Amino acid sequence: MNPGLLAATVLCALGFLGIPFLIAGAPVESTMGVVQKIFYFHVPCAWLLLLSTIYCAVGSVQYLFTGSERGDQRAVASAELAVLFGACTLVSGPLWGWVAWGYPWTWDARLTSSLLLWLMMVGYLLARRYGGPAARKLSAALALFAAADAPLVYVSVNVWRTIHPKTTVVPSLSPGMRGVFWTSLLLFTLLWIVLFTVRLRLERMRASMTQLELAYEDAHA
Amino acid sequence: MPPAMGTAGQSPPVPHASWLSQTIAIAMKDLRIEWRSREVVYTMGFLATLVVLVFSFAFVAGQDSSIGPGTVAGILWVAVLFSGTIALSRAFDRERESEAIRALLLSPVPRSAIYVGKLAATALVMFVVELIVAPLAGVFFSARMAAHPLWLALLLLLGTIGFCAVGVVFSAALLRSRSRDALLGALLFPIVVPVLMAGARGTSILLDPAADLDGAMFWTRFLLVVDVVFVAVGLWAFEPVATGE
Amino acid sequence: MTASIAIAGAYGFIWTAVLVYVISVARRMKSVQREMDDLRRRVEKS
Image 1 (tube, rainbow over the protein chains, first blue to last red):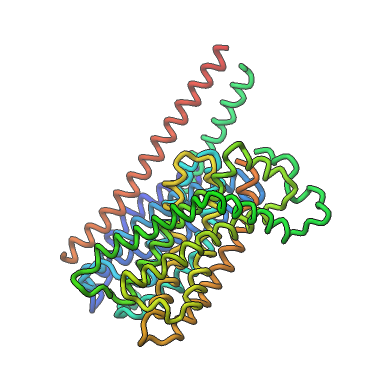
Image 2 (image 1 turned 90 degrees about the horizontal axis):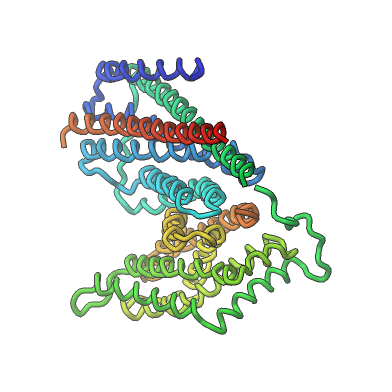
């Protein structure tokens, strides 16, 4: 384990031990009450879902058009993290909505887009696992389509749902909340970097393992 | 991964065969095979009709068969897209038999011509099925399918092109996968949700006598944008996807 | 659904999910490591 990763992991662990106290100490939002505190975890997760998807698409483009193995490794690591943090977003969001709105789900533009983005990234992992001989190319093409699709989904859902009642609950942050929110966001991003680095290492280990195996088989053929 | 022998970009240009004529040749080849067997039109058309029927058994109650333009439009598009996966999965199936795909990829035809040719042939076959299923849905649900027939056909055509633009790439990549049929739908549907949404909303407006047609105009334009984006990405992605495994 | 249950549920889920993911990556790493050691042994034997 290199020192940078070790330091980041320790910092992450300490941060996640400390952040509940920070969140508990943050001012209570006046209209929504205590449940607004889900926001400190929900928004960073949503941000990481977006970040992972973009990063996955960038890696996939590199792999598809330059044949870069590293791009492919970055793409698969990001895709797994997109599914992980997407699941966190999609569970914490409805839990908040259940209390704040009275119902867990609404076909709001953001909710629907996150759900579809998450489904596409699940598709990426499915394609990779069961796609047969061309699985890696297939999943890379999927990531490309997903990235191009995201703005279309957002626009279409935005127009599509205007016939539904609007539920705009945009939390306005007081200074006390802002500090906690940014700390949490930074902490989650740090967690992402740590997880990404470790997952990337696994992918590289696998790649070198495959090469070793091929070399061994060649030598003993 | 070694590049395939003689990638399309480096191969010498074939005289007297423009990109367009090569594309048409690919599309015509598929259409001719389809014309002889009519396999996709029959199976896909049958499935699409069944989907419409299943929905009508589920939704229609009593003597009144009208269920509102929004629901009819949704049912029509779901039927079209679900049954469309049959056409897509068959698009490259024929190339797999006797390894015709290898010959096709080794030939000096540019990948983009293969992509567009396959896209055109698949979309056309799907469109023929839609022309049968849409009036049927109109009959089953007493919907006003004939109110704006050309506009409705245009919506269906644009939606089908967008759907196939994504599907042809996936279908090509899944050529040798054992779980192709299961995967194709699973990967395709989250991505084509904008197509489904625009198609269903636009159709619902066209079927509704009281609705404002500006909305249908918006969704038609939106589908056009979707098509441009999907075909552009498809053209871009098809080459590396089809080149090797 | 009360606020406290929702918060506990959301935080609990996120922490559990991350933990499960870390464990899964660790296990996969261990199995690749094992394969590698196995291969090394085979190479040395031959």
